[in-house]
Image (cartoon, rainbow over all chains, first blue to last red; front, side, top):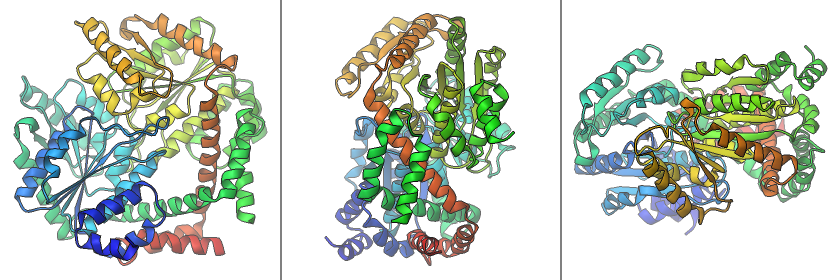
Length: 317
Length: 317
């Protein structure tokens, strides 16, 4: 399949073409850039939703339920699951992603799990590019799910229109969410597993914590929605809220500053990505790096000096 | 204070000089590179320990107790706490770091909380550079604590000699740790809060999970140590284990492959950091990026094309 056919396929919502392009993105194939550039004018309609929260909070179940509810409303849903891989084994950990298959069968839903070797910034970028591909293919809602509660989640939030943070009413979760910076990035807080005892106590405590924190926020106060996703409870309200955000986006009423930040970030990321990829893909540079490793390992030369040396020669060449 | 005095100060273990250098690192002052290059030959003795795990698992308490135990053994301890900042407010969340002050008074312990604006890769690099500074200043053990369980933690683990993963015997923690990739990076698993009921059941379950997983690991099986850090229980065994790793490192018996990976990563990171910093600090480039933001925002030009345009002009100049 050549680039032209691939672009045409994606624009025609062909799943195979979309899958192919996302694989290229995952593999950091430099051929993606001209393709994404061609698709870019067709993007901007989809609502990009980052879904984050502690492992075990029930993110996958919520995404599952949400996708089903949105399909019923005749929306097309793209789901990107991010699985950071280990730098040692290079393998992606799939965990409970199997449950997701239940909805994969539905033609209105496209699900893809992504992993990239090496650095996190790569995974964040890959997710952005995949979102562009899904957006151009006409998906109305793009759900990006991350596994952890670290900086990747915050980076992904920057790249999304709406950030949903999933918590449970367990003791201390709200304090921990605050520590991890999740309070600041949330547009919607979902308090899941509200089928348990004492739910009302926890829920009001979380709301109080959020109200306290909202004074420190530069953004609009977040909505707080209770769910019991396993039993489908609370999903309607969440779906309604997200559809509301989607309509706001189509009317150009979503935060414009955030879009400017995103445009700037996207340009800078591309500069870094394109340049660094070109530099490190250069076999001469690769050779020079390999040659300097023993010196750095034995502390005869600092990595800073090695880098300067390589950059100097790289630019001279 | 000029560079020469700063280098001398750090080598003489002067706290003020060390604090000053770490501030420069945090602020991404380009002046750090020649200083770190001078300090680099003096590094390599300290054992770098990454401490990671879920928020609420008691990492801070463990680090506190560990530092006290190591001071009793006449060791000098450097502690770097990583606080990723929000991309929106730019503020660092300090959380329960206040408890740490208890040990700050001890002259054998140097504690520093670090935050960087913007990208995570910056925080990871800053932590590496700070470790080099502490290593050169003669600290025996460097403890790097991260807040989340995301990719930052995995990146930090790559940069450390030993990774300690802290868990609690709560239901599902071991499954979540596996999902987040923590099982693969751990050298020591600490199961904290073992003062609770049913501890023996959980502990054996976690051990079993690890044994199952260890067949998939490319690394040596991790040690599993129970603690109740709040009551000081289990700290002796953990201290002993880490001192063992430290002695192994001094005898050159720690994993040499990991040191090669680290050297390669360090060179590449420096290339990226130095080059990208130079590029983005260029006021012409800055202006060009700003000028292209509205075009990208309105989808008239893709970020990829914008980046190519800037790189082309940047290189021509």
